[in-house]
Image (cartoon, rainbow, N blue to C red):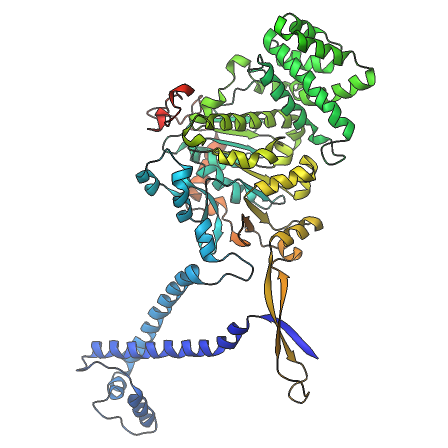
Length: 629
């Protein structure tokens, strides 16, 4: 009978003799150094070096024979107390030096576990050096001197600490993370992304944590933009709130229909049947509902109607006000005819269509939400806001998600689309500095319909999107399996946290985390009397991480899957344990006390100037905006 075990044969064969040789060399170095130091301190007339002859003298002296007076052993024996003190001192100093050098050497050249990316691969792809090498293309507005002197956050995306220490990804990588609830992803993963975002920021979340930890930190940037908040939970008293109206710009039918599609699709995440995007009939009716909602938005915009009137239209499909408003404009009569045709459909069909209509416009029946939405004339200019490097925080609690999701999703989708559109007017058709969207609890809070397909293209335009979800199943329900897979594929860096329990997800992760070759050593189990021959070795391919290994990752640990690299095991840092953790803690207390140093426009109070407004688009087709100079 033979037993088997996994091993690296060459390492096992050399481990014991190498260790013994290393200990002997260290002991010899300690003795020689201590002898030299003793000689120098005791005034010996010669350099005391202990050789083989001295070892013989030492052995003879231990048997009672005196060592020659001129020998090193005789001198060390005479000053034995000093020699022992030097031995202890030298041992301590060399041990500390060996630990420091060993740690530094291991971090630079030590092997990573089998099946993991090597340190050299990580340095080539996920390091400050890698970010600097790509900065010329990704930050074209910076001069060579500015790029060389840039802080890591100006040219890279912060990541947890890996085998090479803190890691940074170049500003071309959209990221995603799968983290069950209460794993600390907001404090450990998303907080650095918000703080270090070099340009405009949009952050949507279900809790105020990210706002409280990062908003004031962003206000301390060299040229901070306005910091606005749209809080459906009404738990944060922020001096500057977002002024946004769903009717802003809807005099343009194209914009009205685009906004209608986002509202309808975002509201449909509550329909959890079929492939996760609702039953087949519901999808058909949603397509028709887009036309109805678009017509309502268009009619409300051209007549100056308020959101309460818009909500009334949605609740009563026989209301003829929108048709009359559209028919009063000659160029909109076709939209009036289409809306009237939908109203005149057989009751079963019309009721099904208006179910989607009411679902999309239901949030505006809530007085609290209507108060957050301004009149069209007061709505913020999203392009000017992005150009000024503004930070926008959207907050909706778990209980508010279903009601607020269509609104928040529309704000997010239009923010991303505006940033993508602006990129065409910038050097190399890339927004610089890049705009960053951090979408916490993506499936429930802001399920942007086109996100899976637009994610990669957005990164190429300087619009970085970082999303977080609790599980792959949550993405499947929201986007359907195919689109969820597209979202995962287009996220060039994925963070996987422990605690996932779905078997299919764990098996999928075990597969994509790769395999490595393992050597099995089979040894005779019966001893020398069994007649069995010596040990034999064989090779096999095994998963680097079994499903149970992924589930049982320690708190704070995260597995990174980056492009073509093998798995990277990293460790996150809680916000309070960062180098600026004490300041972030004070920021949280400042917001709680409501003594927030932000004015009504979103800028830090007491500032000497605000960033200049963005020049008209035709003023900077080939140069960076004036307020960057």
